[in-house]
Image (cartoon, rainbow, N blue to C red; front, top):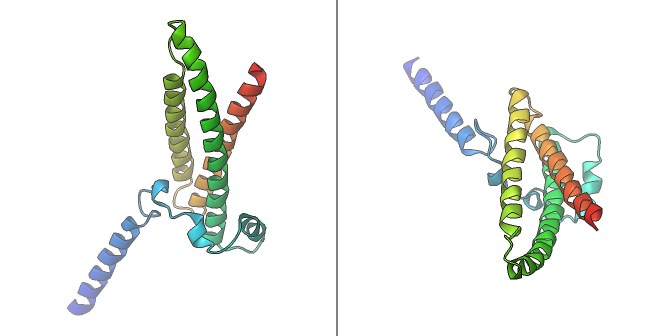
Length: 162
């Protein structure tokens, strides 16, 4: 009886330690997530998109598909950000010749603060759902939605200014 109790206690401790070492443990950190290229080895982006349209996916597949959509949106946003940084850097050279302040440090700080906002907003949304099994799918969907909105802001902002 005592041996069984000790074994159960050890199993609980091992289980808790394993859960907390996972990105899906008690405190989720998306930056520790493995890229979905590891979940879908050897698959092209088109193959992954097609696979993710399947209506009979399990929870892990749904989470990986949601994460994959976020990764794609992040690539687009990062490309746009670099493009705007380059344009702003050129414009800053002109500003400096007129003894005007540079815009680039403020743009970079704004982007950094936007990332903090996005991360915290999505953590809040995910944790509000409690311990639901779809929590992480909701998290990745939130990250994708807000990232695409930011991309749209940056793209529309540049179009409006031209």
